[in-house]
Image (cartoon, rainbow, N blue to C red):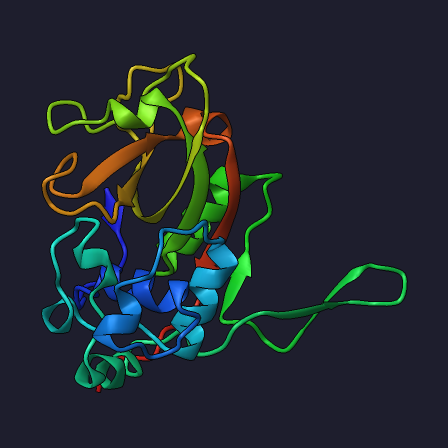
Length: 223
């Protein structure tokens, strides 16, 4: 098994969620109280990781419930977040023929889906984690500490989620015809699955109705 990164700082998922919902705007406690749950895109999340960064969890760690989601971060949290940013982001525009044109060296990039498994393996071997954006059904809901593996289900796909692929095991027996799986870091906390981690079998990559995968190529290091 191989996992990226030998040094790490646990960052605050709820800080990132808050600043993404507010598009980086600082809010008072009273203003934040009226925030509502909203649908966000992976590009929104990456944009905030570039513009604002994400503070350590020690500086913003409210409980994961509907009331605490709206707790605004402190100024110290915003200042610390600037030390944990994606260095630059992919900038794109549409030309006169409506072709998508990308310019400037990007510090994250979208992975090709034509050979997704090998693209993800190559990135992780190079020490670059993958932001994996997907829609899920009961196969994800059935993940547990006793069975931290994304299985199969015929239930309706009705929810979206994002996880981080940080490692892999080429020989892991996942109960499918093809061995091997990616190690996924979830945002649901240590009480979910195997301490907050679960396995995505190689054979399930095309079955999770994924939207896109982003390779994180460089993040501002902690001073």
